[in-house]
Amino acid sequence: MVYWTEITNEARTPCQELFSQSDLRAALAFMEKLRQKQRAGEGVCFVVMSSENPDSVGHAGAADPHPDYKWMKRRKQ
Image 1 (cartoon, rainbow, N blue to C red):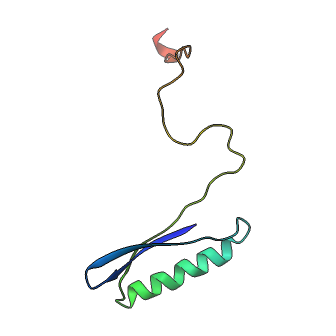
Image 2 (cartoon, rainbow, N blue to C red):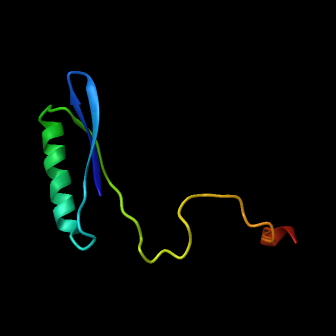
């Protein structure tokens, strides 16, 4: 997914474009077009790409550890 912000008359509008997981080339080319607009002085900013790993083994984000998790630093034993 590519995200960017368009600025028109001081109003900022968040935008997005979805790409196939297997088409990184198209996503990068699209981002380069947005950055060319930005360099030309057009109202484009915050051009970023984000992806999710479909093979992730855990939930995304941060949380407190499970109550039975007993981690300690190796040198503090």
